[in-house]
Structures are given as structure tokens and as C-alpha cells.
Length: 305
Image (cartoon, rainbow, N blue to C red; front, top):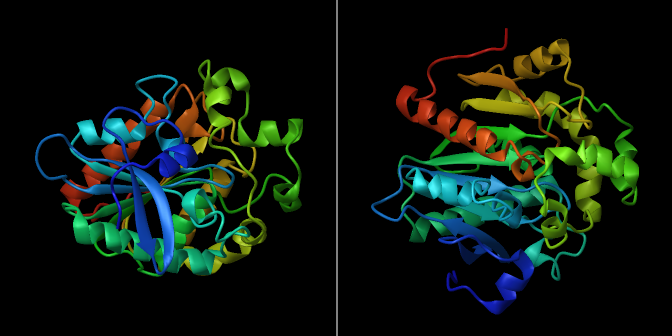
């Protein structure tokens, strides 16, 4: 494992917030790049392992257009280590894996990288998996397969179980329809967001696109196997997924083995929550959910009304 920032890693992940460092981890023979931040004083209380969505990179969780928006700096200030990985097919692994990996293979690669990180860094009480969009699918799959040691909970945004659009839309080239789906109203994002996002955005790998389309079918088998607390957040202007009260109640019901299954909405937000004006509010809710999990040990159930 290499931890010293390098020009190569910096060029692929973009500029970093103060206190955030680049990292490269071995994931079952695949080198994954990423970003991480640790508390300035003392050991972390827990680790937030963050997994970005399709066509993005780890820097999604370290927005620098406003000092309040970075999950990495916020988590470190509150006593947590935050590790944001470039998923397989992104960052340092893009050349080796130009088509990406299937969800099945990503489970192996990412769980191995997380284990490598834990060998060298204190993890406190355990790990919260935070996933956005396709990263949320991976987080839920990792939890269903019990693939992460000391897993505390899963927190997901931008991922439902019933498409609100034709699933073949994931294969389309960028255009105005994709802007609406991936961002929502552009006024929801602070100035400079889209210029900065140009360093993060890229093509959706071929193997990933196929699994993204098939996700609704996978949910019925995967979600009932998850045995840790789960929180799912839907942006007010989320356009990929159906989110009527009935849709969200059915989604929560699939998490039948989870001691806590919470489904929430975030006002004034679009699909890319962690880059928007409400990113800090969302990140604080993530960390509050982690706090609750640490104090209740996941025993208190919470279902949507």
C-alpha cells in the first residue's frame, strides 16, 4: 500500500481539500486510488468508506467549491476517518479495467482494498459504507454478502429499486436529458460546481452500465439479506428513481432483516447530492446516522410512516 501523494494520483483525482491525502490500495491485485482524511488528534471513532456513482470519482466526496461541502474534511473534524475510493474502472485502475467490473467483481476488489486499509489504519468501532448511485448498489451488495469486516451500517443516496425512466437511458450519450437525470435543476449547485466536476466526470464503463440497468431485478434477492442498519436518501429532484410513498415503503420492506431501515427525502437537492448546496446537511445526516448506530448498536428499528 502506498500513501504518499503522487503527481499521478493527484492528476487523476484532482485537487484536494486541506488535510485530505491521496492513497493507493491493493484490491485483490487491482490498484485502487482514492482520498482519505483522518482526525487530527487521536484514533478515529469509526471509518466512513465512501463509494462514488457512475461516471464520477472519489473527489465527488471532496467538493472544493465551498469549504462546507467536503465530506472528508467534515468527517475528520468530527472524529471519523473518511476513505473515498475510486471504484474499479476509475482513477488508477481505469487503464487496466477500461470496461470496469461487474458488481460481483467489484465486491471482491473493493472489499480487499478496504481490508488492506484496515491493516494499516485504525478503524475504531468499524465501518459505515456510504454509497451514491452505482456506489450505493455496490454498498448494498457488499452488505448483503457480509464482505466487509466490522460493518456498522449502510447509507445510500441516489439509488432506488424502481426506475422512473427507461433503464436503457444509462447507455445514452450526455445531453440535456442526462443533465436533468444526473443533476436536476442547476440552481441547486453552488457557483463553480460544473467547472470542478469536469475533472471528476467520465464515461460509464461498459460492464457497469449493464449491471446498472439490471439493478431492479437484483434488489429482490439482495436487500432481504442485509443484517445491518440501512438509511436511504432520495433528493427532492431525484429523476432516476420512483419515490412515491408506496415505492419507498416497498423498498424499506425489502430490508426485512435489517434492524433499522430508514428512508428519507432531502429537500432542495438533485441527484448529485454531495456536490449540491445541501451537501453539508446531507453529510451531517450521514454522520448522525453513524452516531446513532454507534450508540444503539443498530438495535432500534425505524420504518417509514
